[in-house]
Image: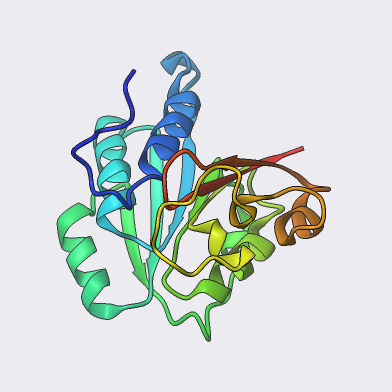
Length: 191
């Protein structure tokens, strides 16, 4: 299956990884009636179009909950992509409480909300509730702030020993940097 579309927006580099993970999660015998439960933090045309496509195709087994903090953007994304099994929630990150979400288990969590610090908070709050995170634009946390194309071996893409992600998450997650395209995506896979 081809994931990368050369005509897509250049910043939607996370799409192929969302699709790959959804394909793996949804490849099962329908007789088992397994459910796939996903969270999206930060909606957008890059991720939401993919979640909408899969939620529409797998109505009986896939549930996606999206969380967005900008009201105009929330309304736009909700009207464009929502389905009965793909719901949108308007939140205030300063007051957001993860308590109810932490009562459930999720097959994976996509993290790309507009407030950078909230991305890390989301991972920290939900790290015991999922086996997989996808974090878009992770090079930001390694000090990369310019919008140019980094090479795979640039220190901003490192998740090796001594880096922020290694020190904070390596004990619990295998960290898989996807750096062939900019902006890079980091996949956290539970050990």
